[in-house]
Image 1 (cartoon, protein in one colour):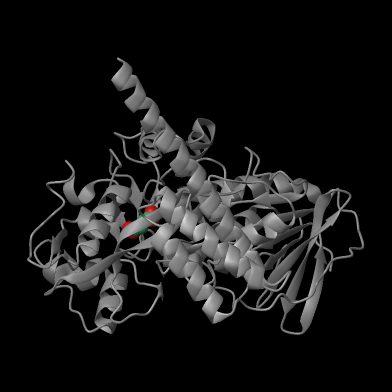
Image 2 (cartoon, helix red, strand yellow):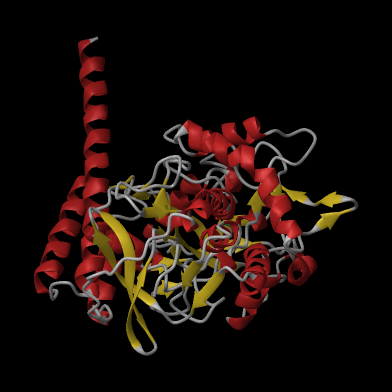
Length: 490
Ligand code: SIN
C-alpha cells in the first residue's frame, strides 16, 4: 500500500499530525480498535497553556525549565509554550468541550506551575475528551485512513532512509510504503512493575527506531507519579492514576499512623515536584509503612462530581474516597527520553519522524511539568503534520523489500523479569550496584531470547535505559567526588 505519510500510533500526537497533514494522504496504524489504544485518552491532568491575563508563554517556559532541572532544550520549550494557546483553541474548534467558567476556560493550577493555566475537560477526563474530538475529526477527514488492529513490526529502509513499515494486520503481514513515517507510539510503562500507562505503552516505537539505527537520547529520564492506586494483591502492570489535581485541591499524604510526612520534607509539602513526592512515598513504603492519599476533608462529598474518573476506579476497588483514604504506591508515568528529534521532529534517519512521548526533543529536560504532555503531542504533532503536508506533491512510488515476519509476543516470564528488574534497580532510586545487577540480568535474558523476536527487541530497549542510567549515575558520582576533593583541597 502506498501513502504519502504513515503515522504509527493513534494518540494525541499521532492524530494531531495526521489531521494537520492534509492534503497529504495519511495512513494511521493503530494496534487495537481505533480509540482504545494509547495513554492520551487516560490523561486526567489537562493541557497547560498561558491563557490567563496574568500569565505568558515565557512564564510557562520558565516553569517548564525549572521542572526539567534546566536540562531542557530551551528552543523546544519556547516553541511549546508559544504554541500552547493556539493549540487549545484549535482543539476547541474541532469540538473538545473544555470546562468553562463564565466566558472563558476554567483554569486550574498544578504542582510547579506559577500560574493557574491548566485547561481540563469534565474534571479529570481531559484526555478522553481531547481524544473523542480528535477521533471524530479523523474519521471525518477524507485524507486519513485508519488501519485498526495493525501492529507495526519493522521499518522498511531504502537508500539509507525509512520508506515504509511492515505491519501485522488481521489478515497477516502488510507492507505500507510512504515518503515519511512518523512514530507516535507513546511511552515505556510496560517495562516497569507498576505504571499508570496502558499495556500498549511497551516501548515498541523505541524498538522500531533502534532496529532502524535511529539515535535515542535521555533514556534515563523516567518520571514516576507519586500516587497510583495501590494494587489489592501482588499483581503488577497498569494501576489507576490518582491525579495530582487531588493534591492541588488539598488532599494530603499520610502514613499508616495517619501522620503527614511531606511537610517535613519539602516547603511545598504534597505539592512539591513529582519526583520529590514520589521518592518520599517510596521511602515510606521501603520502611514498611503503608501510604494513603486522604481527600476526605479537602474534597469529601464533592468527590464523585469533581473527580469522576478517580471515583470510578476507587469504587471498582470497593473504596469510597469521599469517606476514606486511598492506598497509594508510586508508578512509572512518563518517559522524557526517547527517539532523538530535532526542531522539525526529524530523527537521525532520513524519512523517520517522531512526536509525542516516544520522541525526545529535549522539551521536558529531566522531568516533565504537569499537563505538558497532551500539550506536547498537540503542538509538535500539528507542526509536523503541517510540514509533511508538502510531501504529497513529492510522492514517488517505491517497492520495498522488508522483513515482515511476525516477531511474536513477549513471553509472560520475560515480561515479568524486565518489569521487576527495572522497577527494583532502575526505578525511582538507583545506584551503581543495582544498575550493574540490572545489566547482568538483562544480559542473561538477551542471551535466551530468539533473534529478531519481540522479546529481544524489548530487552534491547531495557538495556539501553539501564546503560543510560548507569552513565548518569556515574557522572553524578564523579561530580560529587570532585566536590569532595575540592572541599578537602580547599
Ligand atoms: C496527573 O493528573 O496527576 C497527571 C498529569 C500529568 O501527567 O501531566
